[in-house]
Image (cartoon, rainbow, N blue to C red; front, side):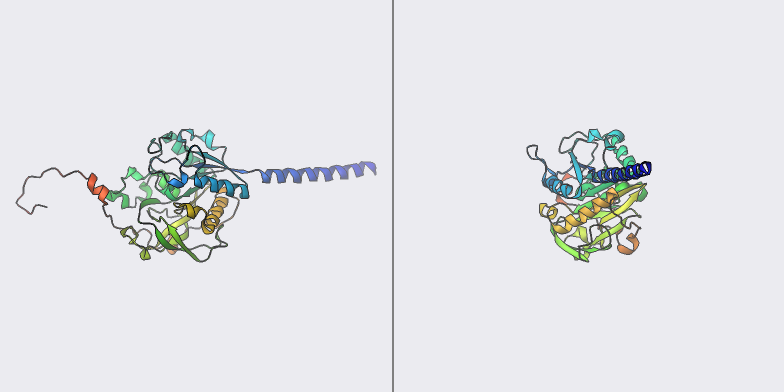
Length: 324
């Protein structure tokens, strides 16, 4: 009986060790790169002051401690490579402009190879999270801020990053309170959010939505103030798959008080969990039913800045017709 008793004790001990190993593996923090290089306008919420973490980064550190996430904060685009990205479970963008240029913040830019490494990284099965001005990044053909081309949907001809993200920023108007309708209350992060919510924010007018996005919130553009919102309701939070990877974006996140808003934090936490693969969510494409007028963009209206930059037209020889 002694050999049998020993075997039983050995198997019991082995089972305990296996359970412990599983728990240890589960408890390992999920690693997320928060990348906030600003080749265009730098938002104050992601600005480093005297080497200290930005306002958004402090919020993320708190959320990370509560959810088992370990953040790496960086503005150095030169690090982007397959080897560098491999250490992270997800990449989180709050960026602006052409990240392959030093731009506004003068931080090291990406290379085109680094940009492709990001796209390949996501397609391989990783997570990509993006907030606010991440849609004001790598514009198709580097369209200038107020050029008419900025208001056109490019579809499959859009920049590869825009296609990865699932949409692109056009312009924004004055900050205001706007109503957002929740399309999928069962998606992670929306469990405690009502069917609609509203607060003060800098709301983006967006375009070039990928046909396979799963819309999570739709903004009530027709009741907003400003010509850039004279359009049907359109998505401003969504999720989509890219290859084997998971992409999640919200246009919210400009204001500091938005980052402390319980609604925003709930939606963000759910989105991060889904992008990491730690929470399940339906991502069936639904833009045709959730926002059927989404591809109708606002009319182009030149701003004073654009008019000031416009060069006088070259003189044209008279033709006998009216001269404009």
